[in-house]
Length: 341
Image 1 (cartoon, rainbow, N blue to C red):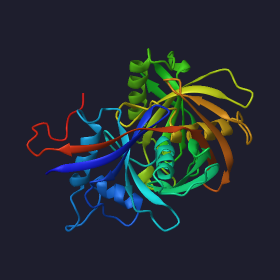
Image 2: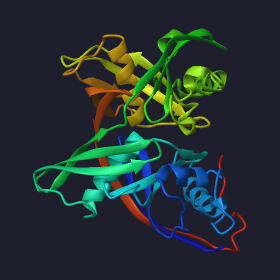
Image 3: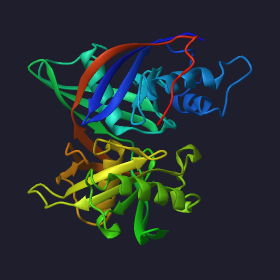
Image 4: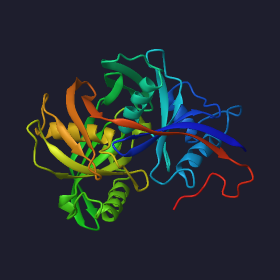
């Protein structure tokens, strides 16, 4: 099969986000969540395209020589209804995720930059996006005709467990769980004898994978209403930094999927941290969490209100376009969709 795929690439606080703009096979399903299920091979009909046809594109874009093991991106699809501007299927090297805050920030910037959503020279434009976990929005901030930053408003975030003791190769560790479009486990890196630095990254990655595996089957990782959102997606290893005048200050690295590392402070993960800090009484409405990544980039987050399903959170960061690409797959290429190292 010959593939010819056009993308616009962004990075959000250092984490890549590859937006596919043309060349996709038909994507069936009535909702974004249903399309993700079909992409995973959990649905479809005899007349629908094989899930592997879409997955060939994901593999092409996340594997070398066209991508890399840290690549992330999205397929833009139709929204669930006319109240949203568009929908998106998020993907990474191992499959399809249910939520992605850094991707939502990039998509908001792209939608305005590309003229899909009208925006003022100075002010804010709201971009509404349907994702597998629900409807999210991006407030795109503009100044002098330029996008300066984007605020991601997530689906409600709910704390499902605090202080779970998990046995690891470094001893027992206390784990907190929160559902913020995906289920995140939060762990103190300090408690594990580690620091959130690039020097400790191999150990952080290994222990993150270990904790995620140890939580398989844990009841608190199940989503209250949608089983498709169940199971730990990412492990957030965090450490304290001196508080700012506005509120808490933390550095983190999120290990997600099968050992993939988020270069940004993790958008949906920041929502999880906000909900947990709120439950601990460490952050209140009006306070701001400064959330730093392992490479030193920063998101800021705040509690924006209450909801029957948890708390509403907002996370602000910046996204920048890095390139426009056209990727092809020659049917005679023996490497096919590529490889991962």
